[in-house]
Image (cartoon, rainbow over all chains, first blue to last red; front, side):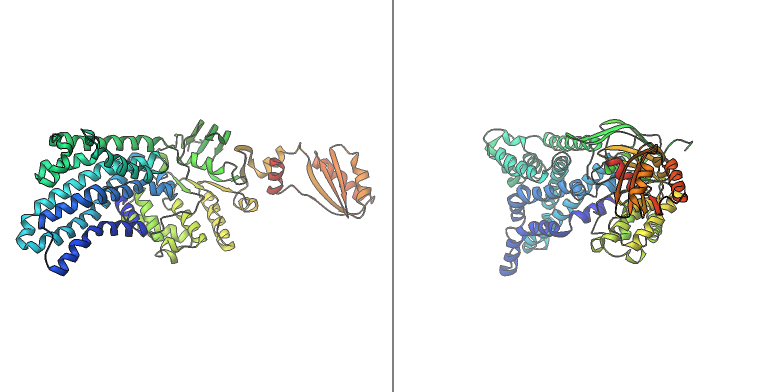
Length: 252
Length: 307
């Protein structure tokens, strides 16, 4: 029920169209190339390039931001929260349900984009390539799912505790995550994206991910460490969101 | 219920930052319909949010079915609330809106659909059940809000300004629905500021103003409690000055104001005053065409209390 209600709600109207367009944006270039020249852009390599150039550092985060903030925030801003708060549902269940719904909603939208992108970039290399490069798609989907688990929890926390979660979320993504990633030393390790890249590098072994996971040639973290960071960030953010949501008096 | 009130507020205060929303309010609500009356910003919606568990009181105790209602699913399952604002999930149809909320309430899909249809019928929305809520008029949205509050047949129904946005026919229907719920043993709490409409739903009221309860009880009880305070009596007569002269010295007459063809008295003992007035008229000293206590209705009580 939560998924149906939230998913429909989060992907409807102008926001849904805007997010769908955003997800489709990187598909334009390989799509046009496919139509005009009949050749894909470097097969699996091109697929990963587009993922690391557009999806992981930008599009995934924006989708997670809008969907994560909207999962509960939309009920608060839209003044429909009283209908939920006066149902025999524990507030914790509402938070967790909405978080899961946000992951599934954002994940579905992004997964559909990845699939189209994969076909557009790999299919021109031949039917076999679609099967051979399938693990690349699989790891990309895993990385995306893991990043959504953490980011959606963080953005849900923002929507529960502050009044302008989108602004703070944008600052977090495009000031902190970008700034820290370009700083010398180990500062990049304090960003979530670094751990997503580390996991993808470790699991897939793809050079593009390895380069991104080792800015300034810092040592590549073990898989377990990065996984723990993502899980702990999700658990702590979700825990704080739960704690706050259960105690908060809502004036809507 | 074991005779215990459905809702009990004991010395409840609530602040919105530096602004006081409720100040030391103690109230009890029992089965039947109770009206919460007061102007906008009086604290009615705050009271309703507290008793429906959306907010926690800054001070004092709120008990619903003997339990603290804040974030308490056990209480939430037994109450229905229709908020004042008209926001709903616009992308759903009316039926799906109710079904969604019933599913949140733990009902199966089939049961939810049956209950939703019954509730839609009770609020006169069956014909619009498949229409998107976004296309609903203000009155239809109000009906749907009331529908979702009663669809799960709760013991406590809290309706914030339930007649807002409704046309006269709709108002009549909702007044009848509220009365039927009260007669059926539900505890119904309705707020409003259109006094004669609340009066049509119930004789039991609580007057709220500036976050305080000014009076509570039946309208008659409140009037009796106010008997020691001046009542306003208008007497239509050919000789208002003569009547004023005759009655001014009577015990309990606080003041008199003379207008064209009328004398307005303020009296603290209305019974004795009306007896004396009848004697004066019977003795033929003046001709009394008609008289009325202008503050017998709820509006006058309210005006008097908040003045």
